[in-house]
Length: 259
Image (cartoon, rainbow, N blue to C red; front, side, top):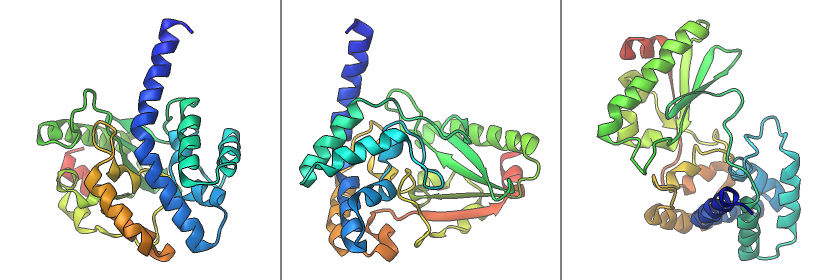
């Protein structure tokens, strides 16, 4: 193993150790959902964790997952306890590549979007892509976030003039530092996403990670206290910050950002 390869491996091992508590929460949720729904653990892990994406396999669309995912599920099937499953998950993560962005997502700094509903709706995404552990939603970085949103809206106007609305779904709509980036009309549309959210992305799971990639102890503890009362019909309620959905005409955004 040369120096560069060794450095990459060491970095991956450090990330696996840092993500272990994060994987722990997801596996506990999948185990609880499997028990409550009477389904196989493999199906629950596929549907109720973002491990497929964290392993670098991308998003699961239309029930189609990467061939390598079957290798992980086979490894998981051989683990008889939660700790053994967690060990297997961390070991599998070590051999995987970095998470990739969805093929249909266009990014502008921390923001990205994809087209939905025959290209008439724009779905917005957010990810922390700041370097050096800087908080992406701090007031100091607010001008940069607004610049990214304006550039994204300019691009959408030019490339997708048929787009009629912009929508989002995330726990972030419960955070004022995120809400202040958007038009008041859009934020006023926020409603709880009861039964509408997928758990194979970051719309719910992202709330547990701080800007360094570590799990937030206070939110972890709330989640673990809530988990025994899980109801599959409103599974989002066990999360400390249940996801919300928002949508407004795209003209509202063009006016707000001057795009």
